[in-house]
Length: 256
Image (cartoon, rainbow, N blue to C red):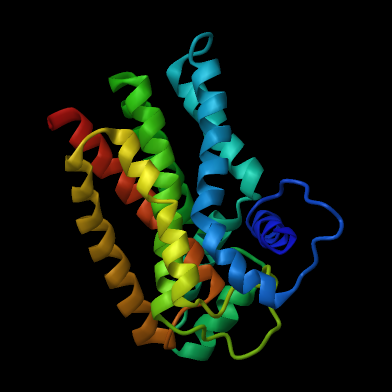
């Protein structure tokens, strides 16, 4: 049991800024196993977001409540995944060879592609969340949980099916899990099931289609250019799929 607790806290330490016990170390072995809890981290992040969003929407305009909810997400994760998305935009936007792409993504400075991409990403999230809240606050809450959990599972799926390609261990980012067993993959998938059950509708299984297509395209794109994935690629996949889930969920809530 203590071993499993340490694995969970390892996931919490690497994927969020939530304080963890001092005895939690930086073991690569535990980090590989901690991937099984990555979708669970999505539940924790979403809980913080919906708590702030739900309480503030009673006393503040919807736009401000949504903005505060988004700030909460960034505060909890330290913009870990957004940073990966920005680096991916810079790397694949400015690099034309594998090594150049990897070098750009490793650079701590943000370029035009990263800034522009991140601005559009945040704007899309903001406007679709505002629409969801105005449509129905409870539907918005359910969608936030679903998007947070399922999008993180797509990163787990990429880790399970593809190869980590960073040729050296020098990186400005946190280490990531590089090996994923079938056992950890199946355990990670368990955390997604309750998120779908929250919707109370089988129609939301339709979400799996666009999410699978987008993830498959990203996997193919990453493999074609650099031969696999890096931590930044995983962060980008999580962010892109989160937006896809929010948009498709809005359409499902509105039209079905």
